Length: 254
Image (spheres, rainbow, N blue to C red):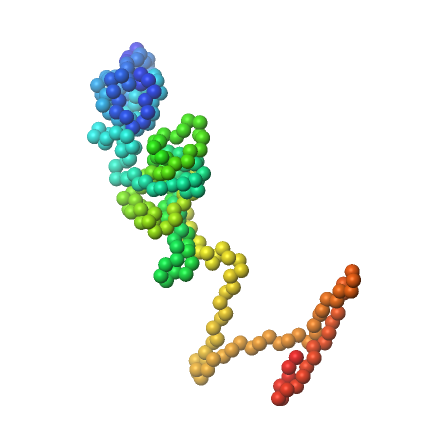
């Protein structure tokens, strides 16, 4: 048997391990555990990135880099940033945004100079949620929680995009499957695309290249027979009426 370092009690993520948080326990030497520790002084004072249960071995992968700080900062990889935005029941996907969730960030931009209608555009894809409110770990029971602030893990460039969008547009999160790593090419949606009754603009008259005169499309000819539905009590029938043609000024009108 050998001795390895384990958690002496339940320890939440983001805290620095103290002497009372860890202890030594017996472990079979024939079952090696790569990444474990055999001395308490090797782990005391090191912050942990993930929660530990009582009796769980302390592994090197659970510990943050020395000097990385405590709290949320230990969960931020090098080169990344934690960026917070305000949330509500709609933006927060009805309370089902938990730490570790992955979302797409959409922005709806209001009309501005040169743009007639608002548009909705996918700004960021496959973004990890670091915290929901003040929690950095998901609720064990999975109950929805309405929070006012959501913190996302972003690159410095994406942090700038999100902060600019939050000041210029209405932000919405779209929850996605955590195993879905795809990056889709999504075309922005304008209000005109949602209005089925919107009529296309009338085509402009064509101008002749030779004479410079405007050519207008010929009008469709009027039908020679009109069909009218005649209703008499509970009886309905179609009746045909010939078109009446009159001659005025050398022309024919119907």
